[in-house]
Length: 393
Length: 136
Image (cartoon, rainbow over all chains, first blue to last red; front, side):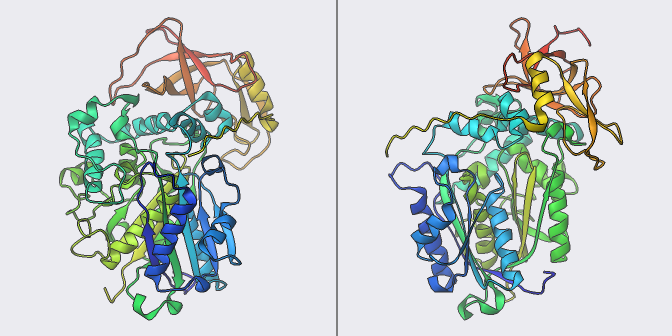
């Protein structure tokens, strides 16, 4: 990276993503994820200099200033605490903030925790209404536009310049949920057929129920460390080699091409420039698939494909393909506790690059480079993180 | 699990957007026209893509063409461009008569309509669709 300070992911962990019915709270999940990540890092509580907590909304948690509360809960009271919020991108933005803090020289080890109770604390209609204020509250929000409606309209624009068919759209949900079947932390591991997807209830055309990610509860954590301060038994931890962020016009209709995730393209370009790699070198990716079509739009914007239809046909992004995408199941299969999403994506890629991911989903040949991609709004805020496996792996 | 109800009554101030929100309540599409490049934004944007922050409020005719249409359990909405605007906007749709529009992936909607007054301070963007076949 440009600053010369290398940042490693010394610890990474995720709780199960699902709808909790066990009387546990988001603070319990945050503690669980942190404790597991800290254990993996080989560090002690006293080693942590700063805490970054990603949580999308106080409405979900009914807890303002959650970072200070979680710092006390996890036993690192006294450290610098910051809450990060950027809609769906919150978790990845927290990873970026921690990375830059370490590069600044003031922090050796930072804990990043993403958490949200998106499923169990409020009913789905209330969550849907709150999500509508993720966009411009004075235009889209007050008009009652749902996230699914906005994504559907964006995807229709994408369809105008691609020739993606209904079957290919369905295949995204089918693949991600099939991956999730092998992930013990996943919310929606399922076997679906194209017909089942096509016959599921229409939410906002062309999106049907099975094209949409679920609301989930859960947490994820990562411990980021200066490479020269990492415990000797963690030298095989993955390195963050480039991060990039960008934003786009808040109104879908103000964009030159409402179907193109321009902010994601810009964020990817910035991350690649910092990492000094090109998109075709990426060998595994977790991309933001809030909706099945959003995964295709992400592949396009991230330049992970020169010929999308051909790459879908030849299963380039399948578990055994050249660049597996969303082995975890993605948001569609693993689930979507919003604040946790970006942290969980980065944690998952870091574990894959170490060869320590869920055995059934671990790539047999570990690629050199991995990508985690998260966004908020209809890609109004984008955050991309590039990682490299250790030379010792 | 403990039940807990929180009721929130906001007093929302539209600020700079006041001409726009007042227009919507009366069924007028009030846009923002940049003083430098004359890009007309509806909904208005405070800083134009050219970087200019000064401009004038301009009332549009209030008729719009649907670019993309969607329907389903979340309702009927569209990405529509109002006549005289350089940008498009997402609108809720309503009909003069009960009509269920069929939708097929990849087809263009070819619909037009007019802005409907929200009748309240809530700045809803609602487009009343013209009967099929009519063009603005």
